[in-house]
Amino acid sequence: MDNYLIMIGLEMHCEISETKSKVFSSAENSYKDLPNSNIRPIDMGFPGTLPVVNKEAVKMALMTSMILNCQQPGYIYFERKNYYYPDMPKNFQITQETKPIPVGIYGQLEYECKGEKKIATIDNLHLEEDAAASEHLGSVTHIDYNRAGVPLLELVTTPCFHSADEAVAFLETMRSIYQYAGISEADSKKGQIRCDVNVSIMDKNLDASDSKNWGTKVEIKNVNTFSGVRDAINYEIERQIEAKEDENYDEVVVQETRRWDDESCTTIRMRDKVDAIDYKYFVEPNIPKYKITKEWLEEIRASIPELANERKEKYITEYGISEYDAKILVKEKAVADYYEKTIELGINPKASSNWITSVILGHLNKFDLNISDIFLTPKMLVDLIKLIDDGTISSKQAKEVLYKSLTENKEPIKIVEEEGMKQIGDTDAINKMILEVLEEQPNAIEQYKSGRTNIVDFLVGQVMKKTRGQANPAITRNMIIEEIEKR
Image (cartoon, one colour):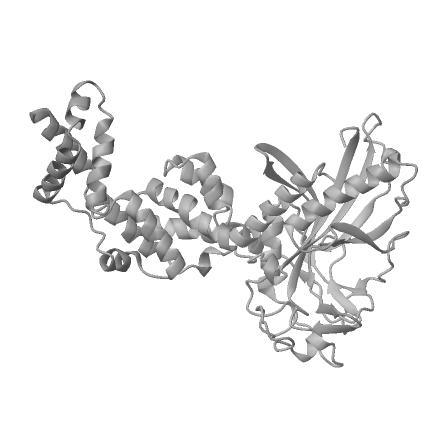
């Protein structure tokens, strides 16, 4: 791979999930488990039905184009893209071609890959309706029209990525933008994100600016996960290098469309792609061209919320969180929202960050959960941290309580009460235990006075054992030293 330059372009499709209805239909725009339970006649392509543009979807599309530093149009209109698939009952898709301007063209987005700042260049962003979902079961195909007509943003980059890591880092940045801007959940588990990937290679010693030096471009369609994007790109790079170098390799790189297969971890040929498909675009006659006013554009620009990078900067400068922890906290908007809620409830930002990044996110990763799936609320976490601050329980006990709360769906305070975990702060009770321990460890005093002061840690541990971890460790330590020095 070191002898080659890699050129990767992306087409990212993301469903707008935060509108009440679909893009041209009054059907509810929400994820439904029951197939074909959320449709209207227009979604099914019935004769005589007419589309009505969802203004909120257009607003969100324009907002995205602004975040990507694209040019916005003076007018918007839609076009018909004609193709004949079973998941498109009208036999055309209402979309936007790149000429004239869709909701945005020629943008740039800064993203970070392995600690290094990179710039992705955007060719265009356009708004369209999604197709139905097909499920292939042997010789039978089931079609779910719940997805038909869901507003879909298609983002097309230039071939500006040079590794799978760069491509995935960009996609993660875009997912974050969609989530923080309130445009989409961007949940791949619900099929809200899909990617097409274009990959080609060239010898490193050739002139990269001359397109003739680049190898044949291969397209990989409909990759549904970011891990799949990474694996598909890396496999395709190796496949193309092997085809170029190995005379006995039985595949030739041709311009074609392939798909990523999760089971075999390979890309598989689907069809030739010699020329661009003629979709016979023409202006959608049932949706009039309409003007995008400067006033509306300014209103949209002013409504762009605080994005991940802005929150990250705030966590570092205002809350004193390390850059590493801040990056972890803002990766998922739901996690950042959870964190901010704890701060609103009056807890120390560093303490909250420590518990979320260490214990809670570890639990989520272990069981493949979202933070919205857990029983523990921000208020419960705050109550637990306050029990540590006021000396009711130790940090070690708090960790046990937190794990138990996450796995058993119990409030931390109730766990502390039920298991009698409150720390003993009564000095008389602690002193009694200290005297017992010193009697059991007659050499401890002599060791301490001979310079082995770390024996105190051992003695604290013995007291903690006798009290089942309930003695206040700080008070216990001071009292042990005081008792020893009296002798």
